[in-house]
Every structure is written in C-alpha cells, then in structure tokens.
Amino acid sequence: MTWLDLLLVASAVLAGIGGYRLGFVAHALSWVGLLGGAALGYAALPSVVAWLGPGTSSGELVLVAAILVALGAMVGQLLGSLVGAQVHTARGEGLGARTDRAMGAVAGVAVVAAVAWILTPVMSDVAGWPARQARDSAVLAALDAVLPEPPDASHLLADLLGEDYPQVFAGVDATGEVGPPPAASGLDQATADAVARSAVKVVGEACGGISVGSGWVAEPGLVVTNAHVVAGQAVTEVETSDGDRRSARVVAFDPVADIAVLEVPTLDRPPLARRAAEPGDIGAAFGYPGGRPLRAAPFEVAQDLVAIGSDIYDERSAEREVLVLAASLERGDSGSALVDPTGTVVGMAFAVASDRSGVAYGLTIGEVDAVLAAVDGQGVSTGRCAA
Image (cartoon, rainbow, N blue to C red; front, top):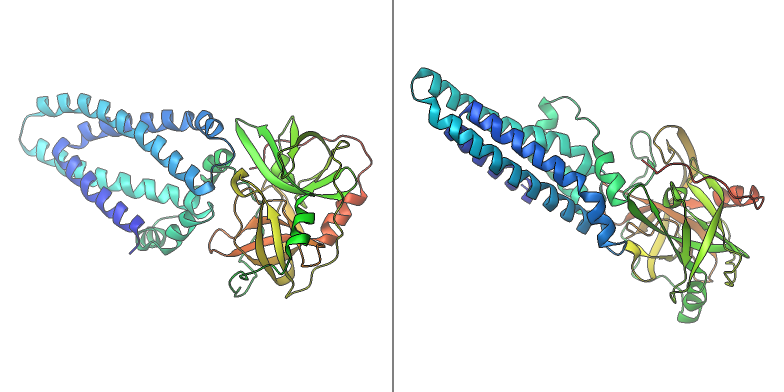
C-alpha cells in the first residue's frame, strides 16, 4: 500500500464521518463550496506558475498545484459547511433525518472515490513520483476494475506544468527491459567543456506559462530543439551556459516529428558534429533540467526503433525513429543534445517515460537532418500551445 492509498483511505473515512454528521443535504452544500473553491484555486495556477519561474521542477509544480487547489477547496468547503450547518440545525430528528445522515455518509465516500477516479490520468501523465504512485496504488487499481475509463483531465495540469511531451507510443509501449543509466558518460572534461559552449537553454512565454527547454547548435547560427518547447511562443530566446541571452527566430516547426529549428544569427558558437546512434552507445545529454544550469546527464542507447505515436497536439498519428535511452532526464531536458564521448551528437532527447524512472526517449539524427534540410531562412509560425 502506497502513501497515496493511505491518503485516499483516510480521506474516505473522514468524508464518510463528516457526511453522516451533516447529512446529505447539508453535505451537498459543503461540496458545492469545495468545488467552487477548488475552481478558484485552479484559476489562480497560471499566475502562480509564472511567478515561480522556469527553475521549478515538475514534481515541485505538481505539489504547488495540489496545495493551491486544496487550499481553495478547503476554504470553499468551510463556507459551504457553515451554510450546511444551518440546514442541519433546522432538520430535526426522525426517519427522514436518519436517512439523510446515511445518504450523507455514502455521498462523502463517493465524492472521494470520484475525485481519485478523475485524477488518475492526471497523475499517470506527470513524470516521476506522481506516475509511480498512480501505477502502484491498490485503491486506484480497485476503482479502475469497477468503474469505466476516467475522463482525460491530464491536459489541465499539462498546460500549466509544462508536461507537454508528445505521446511516444499510441498503444502499448514497445520497449522491453531497460537497464539503469550508466554511472559515467565517457566524456573527458575538455570535450564536455567544448560541447557546453554549443548547448543552449530555450525560453519563451506561451499560454499563461513559461516554456523552457534545451537546444544545441547544429549549423552556424541554427539551433535545434523540440517543437513542443517553442509551441505557441510569440517571442523565443536562447541562453548560453554562461548566461548570454539572444533573440531567436523559428525557421522550422514540425509538430509531427517534434522538431523545431531556431535562427540566431548573433550566436557565435560552433556547430556540433553529428552521426547516427547505435544500440550500446553511451554519452551525455546536455540539457537544462527545470530551467536550472546546464547539466550533462549520462545515457546509454538501449534500442533504436520506429514508434507510432501522436503529434505534439495529440491529434495526428506520428511515425518517428526513436532512441530508447537509459537516462534520468526531466522537464527542461527536451531538446538536449545526446553527445557521445568524442563530442558528436547522436540524437536529441524529446520525452521521458511517465511510468518508470530512468527511461527516456530521443529522436535520431535522421529525423533531425530531415527537418534541417527543409530550412529556407523564412520565419514560420509556432502554432498553438502543445496539448
């Protein structure tokens, strides 16, 4: 039993006791207040996320979102309970009152179950501990066995928390067992320092939040990143590892491949060589996790396969050649250059597994080269925000 199971069971018990004491009618009024308060808390999330900035990890953002929504819900429920208490006082006793109390207890437990049922896909789609808790929860598994498929509410937090990775596999994950990430990347310090000069942070505001990712210099004045990083941005900037920030113009945007190319004429950084990856290759992903300073995370290529997933808007089917990586990556690492010990790029990170730690996905150099070849120097639209 996980801590999520303990929380759900405790919440159900307390809700049942509270529902019995208040009765169904009064309890319903308290839940109306709770839902209204939660809605107000959710409405405040974009402002809070923007205030926190891009250096906040996805797990921290999930915690902040949960606290803010819960706080609004508690205040709303308190106000609703005050109104409900007046109804409870005027109710009197008798068969009708006992029936009302019994229905209140059932309603309290049912509401907790409904909330858990609705939030299951949200937690499953947020990489890291939320997905692990949802996967290992005995309570959620029991609800899943007896209730229909929950509505997909994952976009509610995805839009706010930047969990906008495209769907890598439309069906069952085709990857097998993936070993742990390697302890070292194989890059010596001189090579790592040289690569770091050409690894940039990609930053912009889109749809009420801050979008942050990583990129790398692929050609003189051209930076490659993921399309979902810059989707919906009116203004895009790149920042080098030493803090130098430059304006960028998007000259290629492929939402199916999930690749974008940025033109930064004033960026005087050398392009990185590239080659096709092979299973067993090791190296480092040069990215800016959570918008924090540049980090080189060790990786190993476990598999090279063709994956049928969806585009960044989850609307069209997308066929991509994908590298399955043993690597501990996180939000902000999207667009990271996957660099071998010689300093050569063998792929680009674009997603992490939501149901297991230490597994990520990269796009092959063939996918990157195809988009680079189509660049004609003209600016293009970044579309709307990724789903």
